[in-house]
Picture 1: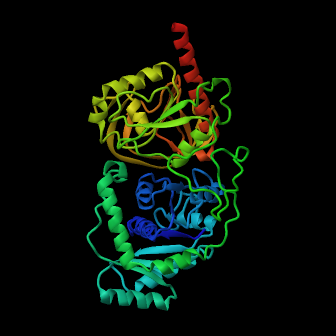
Picture 2: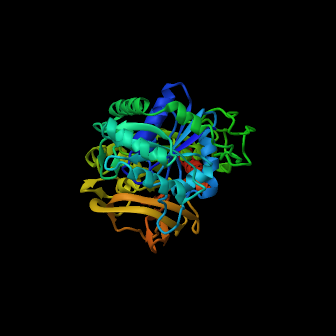
Picture 3: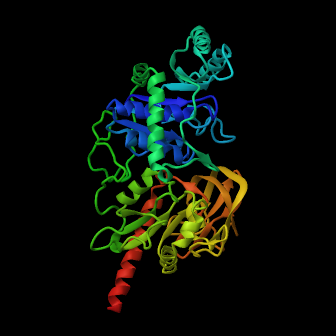
Length: 491
């Protein structure tokens, strides 16, 4: 599998511009490009998906463990011609106080992939060679294969930069001139997600492709990607190693490419007597512009566990999908859409009634806010006896957590690593039965477990603990069966 990791000395150097542009430019050549993002970011993978037509996938060595990085990569890249991995922060920046853990450098080493360093050259000339030399020599196991110079001011500036890097023996694989930024607007948590600006985002990705095509040597970049040696790992499977369908899943393209809605074996594990006799239990997943944060593997795991995953939009839909047995409300920007979410009273009442009836609900961050009594003074679903509001303080970072209370999502004592990323607060911050106890970097309890509801600020990656998806699918099947039984008794 030819592959590249696009990294930078620091955030703001142009990684997203180059990585997304490369993905789109190679896809325009007719290549099947597999897009990946190091770290927990949800927004950039949306742009990657637009550029390639395939789900953007995250590779997070903190949340999933280093041992899953290559298998998850192999799962996502199956059947493709090229994989491009966008890094996170600076090349060697990772989880605070944990050395290289979760850094772009660690991901590159785990994938045995060459690194292309994107350097903001706007305020330097010959010094660029010292900068690049430092990054190339800091860790000999990281193979820096070339540089793309960003924000180059003139032909003369380009000549000086190239001469300096030639002295350092580092190939220049591209030069991007200073130009008006492609329209990719940002707000309090980063870029505005694709789902909120679909047409404009498509135009932005096309513009990024044009910039990269004009300024980069795509043939040289592809040649570098082909120098990546074979990976000797078994691809991750949402069904688990004991439930595979016989496909080898090797990196030679013998598996068919996945899609945004993968087909998995019907039935799934562990649903037992709670499985719907007429079909798979429906797990409704919130989507649309207000709820854009999700990992592709979550839907795959639920499907493999026997559920039928159906997406709905809380901004527009006035009822939950027919036959809903479980409800997943992930992250996003409900604070931006609070008036519209509040105005959809029919759906708020449906969610409240579903939770009151004991239906299993898994809510992360934005989902937590939506289940609250209010958000910035606007009525929400009222499932939780808590109120949420915007804050000036950014809460950001990795967390180590243990489930405090038994829930539809996790048994008490289940340990997971996750990530917090929000500018809101909810009061109180935890219910009588908290969802999680954080053990690092601080000790506190957080979130709510009541009846079938598990609601928390913590973003988790279920590939790290597939039992979470299986447990939730079982709860959805059991709830759906109980509703049918009660309905039959009333008749």
